[in-house]
Image (tube, rainbow, N blue to C red; front, top):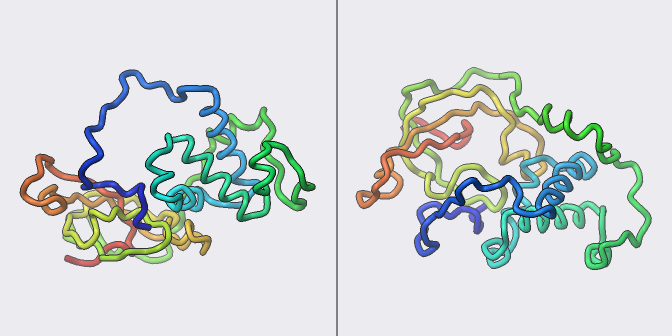
Length: 219
């Protein structure tokens, strides 16, 4: 999706100013926002890629004027509305009005959260076919403008690069994010010379992008 989140190479947004010793959370509500997002995933049945897709699909003005965790909450509300886990009236009032949806997995109990977060959700899968590319291969990314989620940045499409790492087979986010299943694919790190991406005026050296196999073709 060519959404507001894909800002690479765009001008006019000012310099990046990292906050020294930035805390994980700036306020208690941010901690709660993350907890709600993580705990509602199993209840709603959506994947991390569908969660990312929901954030990216927010209107650009809303996305660019919201803080990090405001975006998380807005996406969570959208996912819950789509799956009938909440109504507009309930979100406005902050109270449950209708009977809860039955047949859903229960939310994690508080004493199980730490173990669940430590366990994570590994995306590695068994290979069903040999890798198409190897370290050192010259590749080119495909040109595409999907209306659904993708992890291939807009600035890196149709560009030449070199395979520098092979990560094995992982869940394919473009499929998972659209609710079409995992469709595991080989995953590579590709090195792009900065001039290939940005042109001769860049002051950067190189950019490394993790690319799933369907993004790539031989250069």
